[in-house]
Image (tube, helix red, strand yellow):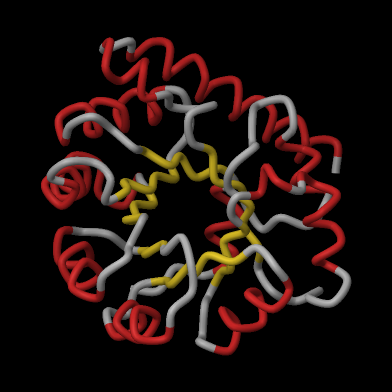
Length: 214
């Protein structure tokens, strides 16, 4: 069930959904896929998150790399995977929670910001270290982390938009996590699905341009 790093890198952009309802989350995923973004993290700050995960898994199957985020309690990890999540994301790093996430067999992404936290996440077996909130340091900070941690898969989340995707990847990101800049809560509340699709197209175009220039 573990997603290889190469597949995460190939996806490039993971949309982080903090939706106002499970129904809105599902419709947002449909809109994202229409715009070319197929990496999705449905957070537990979404009401009935597991219901949304199950419906997205039913609708899209393997066409969407589907995960659950804002995992803060061990029981959430097991329930999210049972619903269809293939990767699990915590905003921080805590030993008991990390063990529960690993026990599911899903890909584990633990949150960190400082070098000490990156070391802790790596020691606890994180498959990917989520650098959060990455907006505090920007691509330059991620590039600095690459010095002591050249082989650790890092995924910055926060401060990522369609205009700076290339900067993050050039700084050493395995992939990027994008929240409100890609799928804003306001757009979801308003049911502005085409707006979300347009943002997804912008992110997809930026990613394609970066890869073409490599």
